[in-house]
Amino acid sequence: MTDTYVLITGAWHGGWAWRPVAQRLRALGHRVVTPTLPGLHDGADPTAHTLADVIDYVVDLVERADLRDVSLLGHSWGGYVITGAAPRLAPRLRRLLYWSAFVPAEGRTLNDEVPPHYVELFNTLAEASGNNSVTMPFEVWQGAFMQDAPEPVQRVVHELLVPQPLQYFTTPVDPLDPAALGVPTSYVLSVDDIALPPGEYAWDRFAGRLGVEPILAPGSHEACFTQPAGLVESILKA
Image (cartoon, rainbow, N blue to C red):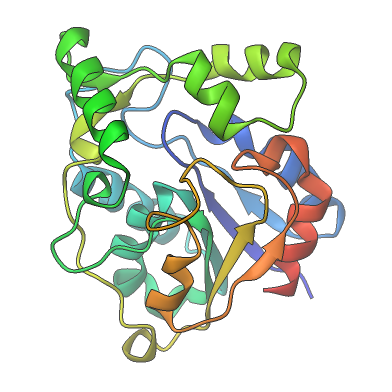
């Protein structure tokens, strides 16, 4: 069966980040759409858009292309985006997938869901930026986000990242009720993902918010680069 996938990136990324995954899905006959979201194009103005604008963009993208039976997948911060878009797109969705992604709770922003040292880092960097954006430090990226890749690969990918608008981290999204949505919902969890540390802030708490057991995938938070074949296998299982 040919499926249509709309893949939503996490913070600092554009649609380019999905290429290793998208190539494998397309080789299996699937249609894959990998948008770069507003505010995350190279050279974009980080102050120009709100999180609501990003959600509107995804809804409009699917509706304008008249996409149906869509598998809508969000990675990391992209969980906020797909949670906001899903109720408006429900008749067009075949399934909803979160991959190592935030699942919003009532009134809680992304900054409410990460360890305090991340909040302090994001706020400090945004204040220093002059345009309310966060540029990911290489050392943080290397140690916590893509620790399963050689340093030359880490540096190449890091240089492609763009500043993330801080307002995308400080805006809540209405939580999802999977039963009311009426769309099968799954959570894929990369087993070596330490972008959120083990314990109170670990990724595995988010599958529980959806009422599902996580489907395990190999690799780190950036398994789209380091373990794309294994990630695709887990996505297909979901």
